[in-house]
Image 1: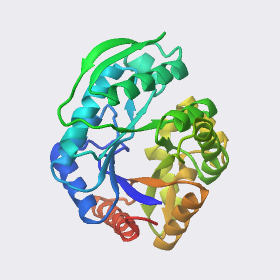
Image 2: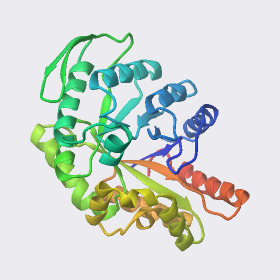
Image 3: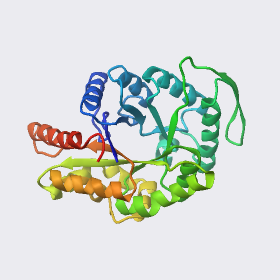
Length: 314
């Protein structure tokens, strides 16, 4: 299992340009294989953030986890992704997903009527755009494209599809390089994510897909306190039906149970169990524990040091 880490916060903190670049530089220096950014209202635009990250790194993979598809036309997404690919020298992992009705309908005012069909056609347009340069033509029910796309220095992009439902997981396996998960425990990965994903890949004659697991991680001496903290920091995900359904496929009742917490030895063992369940890549979301700023800084340091000691692979 390759070890990667989020360099832009997913727990509500605002990460600016300077901090993003500082974190990403540290991630490469410590031997991690990848740096990940989300695309959320309190964060930088995901693909723009990776251009900034590319300026201070040379080796590591740079990934989005994930860019929502509905607000961005697939041709526009393809052009921006190819531009990022040119800027980072071919290190981009484009994580995309249809997001959720609360985001697409409530925030963006768009229809979320056909997420599977929309995603399937979206991937078709991306495939044709990345096969260029040249004319991109597609006629579907959701998208109709007939345009020239030729980005200087652009190269085919590795696409990962955020997928949790069986049908979407099979689509990820059959049409992309893998999936990115969130709020999945080891049982969900082993008995739900991996089988459906691999079925899709096998039917399409594709190589074994990647399973990139986004996991909250905190090294500490009081696991119960850390789980209580995780329940508060990540409480929003319990209210989203998609995550309620994926939690139901495993043994976790909520974010507190998915979080990887405990001493260095305990966290290492838990991460190894995710590896054994079929996770190929860790995208760690480090969260802090402590009643005061100094304690939280120490908590983050301890977690970062353990993850760095395990990099690049567990």
